Amino acid sequence: MTTDDGPSRRCVAVLSFVPYAHPDAGPSGGSGHMTDLKALRSFVAIIDEGSFAAAARRMGISKSMCSKMIADLEADLGTRLLTRTTRAVTPTAAGLGFHAQVADILSRLDAAFEDVRAASSRPSGPLKLGVPVQYTLKVFQPHLMRFMDEHPDIQLDVVLDDSRSDMTRDGFDAVIRIGTLEDSSLHARRLHDANIMLVASPDYVARHGSPQRPADLRDHQCLHYTNLKGPGTWPLRSGTEVVYQKITPAFSSNNGELLRALAVGGKGIALAPEFQVADDLARGLLVPVLADHALPGVPIHVVYSSRKLVTAALAAFLDFVGRLDLA
Image 1 (cartoon, rainbow, N blue to C red):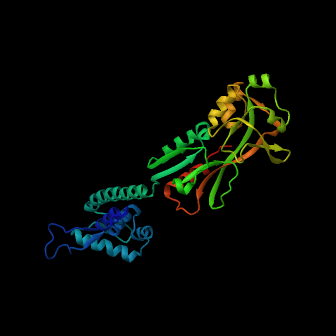
Image 2: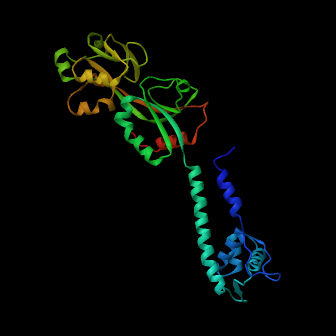
Image 3: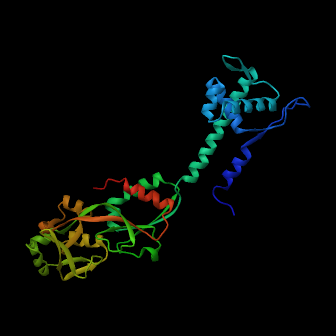
């Protein structure tokens, strides 16, 4: 069976030993030893450092071993590469030429090894994400584009879905969820908090008035988002607590963008995340309703299963979102 690191290991096996027999070597010539990379690196280190002792320290070997490897190398080549005196070690003419070529070869070889290592460690493969529709379009889309730029080898499959899908059944690696998490078998990383608010169009408020307290919502046309916890109830702030106000929806949908459009069109009051209606508020198309009862600090998490292996692609995504400043 072929594995990802198979070719690189074979490459190491071939290149770890460089057979070299001098063409003019006869019975009294080169010994036909196999010259290994450490000997070549030691030779380059001696020229660079100017001494056997310094080269041995750089290579992490003893001075005597360094000296023996050079002696074997010279025997293999059938020529002297270094001139040794009590004061210095200098390359011969042959040594200078050999050093230039070997240093270049070793540099390119090291670069080739690094390229293989980098490619094998780079996150890759499929990554399936489940994300809320409007959160993605209004907030997260540019960050997905950045993630693609940073990790071109990851194949993203992004499913825009406002429902709380079953991660295991639907094959998601991670999902982004707004609100309280209830499944303790999941791992979660908090991204930031969002404010949830009530909004209506100025035209609706002019025609129907603005509710003064949560109970007044029972007399208004409420545009209900069906993915909210509890059928026909809206979470609102009452002092320091969250209460669920009973409503009778005039219109219900599982799509927040449709509800936003209906609110802009004067069809009723909608409960929506601030990021979804911020542009409409700035343009005066919507106005806050019961502002004192808006729900602050609703958490937004990226969630992944504790039972599923964290792949390199998922780990890269978790690291990426952990570095985002979404506040």
